[in-house]
Length: 184
Image (cartoon, rainbow, N blue to C red; front, side, top):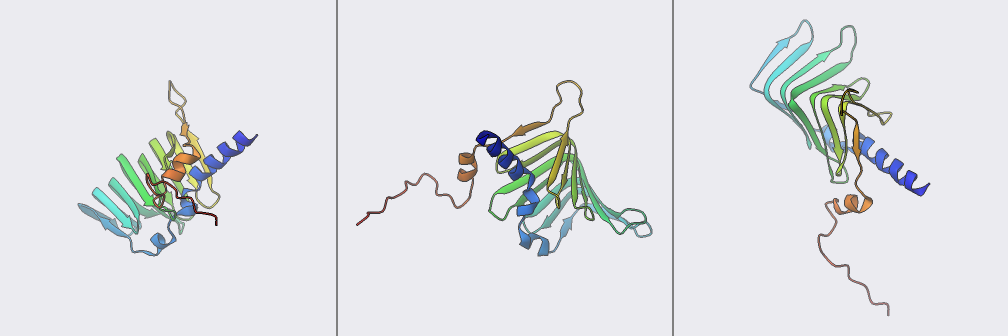
């Protein structure tokens, strides 16, 4: 039973990536660098052609193309980064890196859902989930990973042991012996 609890805790750690995102990142300006861009004001859409680099605090997105638009008749904003692969990275509040990559990274701001399509990978503190499709609801902290179901294509989850995660913390002393205090 204890082993199941450790496995469940490790899976929850992977899935809670955005719950630990640096709060200050979302307060920073968004800067988009691209080779060119087009804006379709009537249809409320901007397309950036790349390479494209988006930064907001420690958040970084690299893509071949980035499309920002509102769904028809809705107030929802959607960002779609495409590439071979498109990548996302961020430093979490605890200082550890988190990253994602896929041929398409789609973020729906209204539903707070991140969808990774095509050779999708989500990595936090060395633990990783890969599949053809990964959907992550940030608010509900629910993750769904799927494969194509053909051939050897499968969803793969790699969970690092707790000692790896403790060693990955940036404030952990590297190769320093712990001194025992004299008890006088």
